[in-house]
Amino acid sequence: MKRTRVNVIRVHRSPLDHRRGRLKAGNLTLPCAIGRSGTSHAKREGDGASPAGCFRLLQAFYRADQGPRPRTGLKLRPIRPTDGWSDDARDRRYNRLVPLPCPTSHEKMWRDDHLYDVVIDIAWNRGPIRRGRGSAIFLHLARPGFLPTEGCVAVEPRMIRRLLERIGPQTRIEIVG
Image (tube, rainbow, N blue to C red; front, side, top):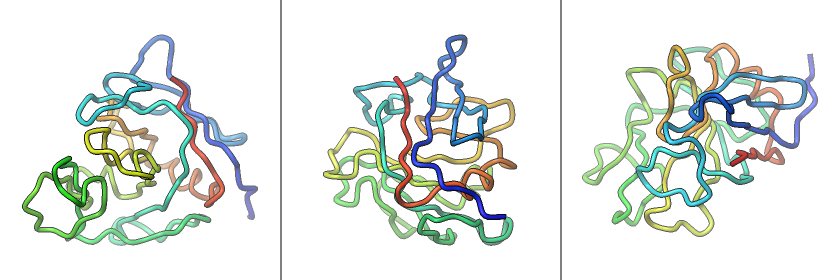
């Protein structure tokens, strides 16, 4: 079944718990987790906030050993065990995919907790990259109970593939502050 692509995904923070919200993509509405500090218009590295604003979706990554290739209009790349993401503001590769091993601070993309089995790269702090403004804002899989993230947006594992089918390179995500 062909799905209509949505132009905007909106994430609204819950008035009852600033670490949770609702994600709406066309007629699909999902509970989501957001940053442990809620949302912020002045995002900084390590603050635990999800950045408020409207952003492009750059690409998606997936672990081929954890399920079939997702269907999406986004550029899609398999995650390798040697993939990392630089979160060291002093590194010239800050807020970019890096090969592992990496001598500077980074996050592993191939995670034992499987939160990044399917992940969408949100274009936060990308053009130009400003050191210290925060790195790796993703839309990824939620922990059980929708525990808060470090600044990302997270949805149920069984729902992310339904979301991916609805989005493409023209889709934007708006995180309402």
